[in-house]
Length: 117
Image (tube, rainbow, N blue to C red; front, side, top):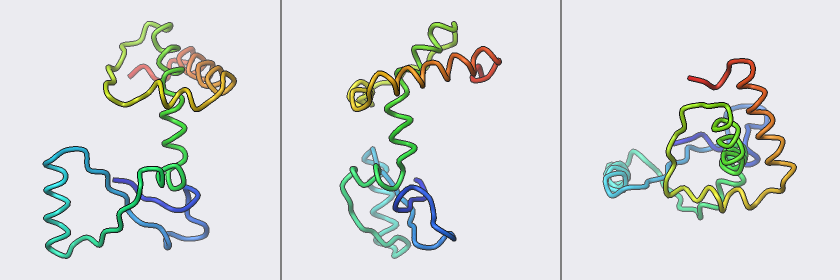
């Protein structure tokens, strides 16, 4: 679930956006359907590509995660195990400058003792 506005942020106030729900399991589908049937949710279905417009920072985080994980591995951090997220495909959407900037930024944060939780 996420708040969503065209362009990623509200223009002047909190109005004009909507809440975004992504169901990834059968149980999630069932819960969503129960809420719809109960009249609690009003639903508009959109292609997942809408997330690029309404949550651009989340898209960039996914595109950057491989570079950040590389810096974490170099820094001896405990590594998360991501599966089935198409991270390589997301990373391929950006150039080497983007990845170098994200890797270097993570290295710098690690050198200050951050991101080690």
